[in-house]
Length: 114
Image (cartoon, rainbow, N blue to C red):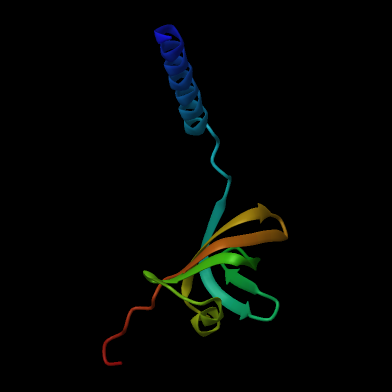
């Protein structure tokens, strides 16, 4: 009986090691980021256009996208009031098929006298 308990313990321990190694070596999901200025936001089509020094890029905004203004999480529709603000978009896809996974709007700094 002791032999079976010992054998079962070794088997469980071995499975735990294999699971830990495979989880540690699993590749991360590929993603990209782009920083620029919000050129436009279309709430109906759920798209965001970001202008960089090289070109303008259109991103699809799915239901799972996370939108941040500074350190606060905000609703997707608030992007309309952020046109002209600096933004960093994390996305998947390439070419004309880019889907944003997160949008981080940098809050504008207040200028003196305003």
